[in-house]
Length: 367
Ligand code: NAD
Image 1 (cartoon, rainbow, N blue to C red):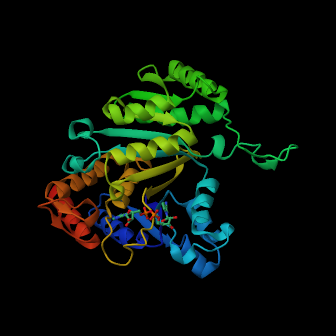
Image 2 (cartoon, protein in one colour):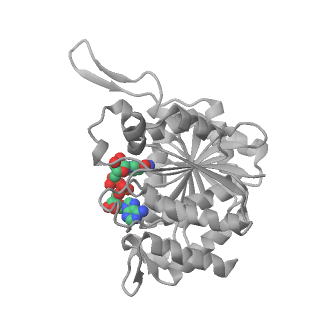
Image 3 (tube, protein in one colour):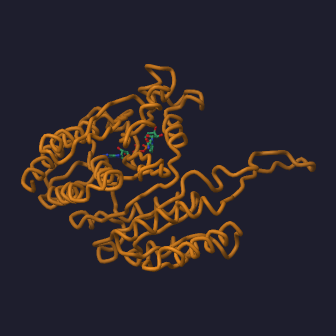
């Protein structure tokens, strides 16, 4: 049965990189590898320009109805001075909130051909393949009470609350264990159980879940500060890392930089099971709208293309097609084809559509 994909290309380089993804979707549909019906909507500044809000209600409804959403990027200087309530990013936050996307998956994968771009030594990052699973809708970014108050002595106080319940911990840990099954069967659960009660609860609940239902998975607990250190000392010890919203924010950016390139990083945000094994999900590159290069045909489309590959894998279980696409990306990099952001001496410089052309050629060769 045909699956519905909603594409929200957004602002800046979003529509440019998305054009290349759409070419790949058309190619896969024509080949009979997929049967996707694609619709498109506006998000971010481009939605504000048309609707006066960064995400129209109709677009939100379409996202709720879609089998998966693919997003480009939002934002740009044109909309920087807008009121907070209608800033482009609010469109993204609304999608995440209403689709209840509680699990953020950020792979840190080092392609052999790009290993030298990392700021770490080649032997430390070559072959690296980590998945960071970050809790996205709870913890200190949302906990109550919060706010800035003035105390009786006249001093000001800023307050945020780190809070997690058993069900919030269990559902994110399930995502991590299920992923580990398809990978290296190893999970590191990361918190600060030594100094935070919420971390202690996290540790106990993750361990309980592992013992009850995931006996085949090797589980290690690690303090977040140690994890930060281990990520740059010996990142290849990790397979899946599961952690809370705050630590995940920091650790996923740190792990991403091991790979050396923003234009290569995909992500997925997954929601609860809404029946029949279906989960709401949104896929998007980690990078932003890159206003400095927007409209110049220079953007690297691979992060967005790899986000689409995650969609094939995690929303639709099309592992063979996802592998084919990932391998085609490897092929193109091995051929020395590069956009400006990942350019190396002796390589061939191409633009956004040139990268798309090379990828389609590599897919043809593998089909
Ligand atoms: P950015 O990720 O847009 O750009 C940072 C740098 O990386 C720029 O020099 C850019 O040219 C380069 N870059 C990013 N993606 C690239 C690609 N695919 N190919 C080649 N080069 C690439 O971050 P920024 O400059 O801090 O933010 C720009 C705008 O994007 C802001 O309005 C910000 O709020 C927004 N933003 C949106 C998202 C999102 O939509 N998820 C994420 C981050 C930033």
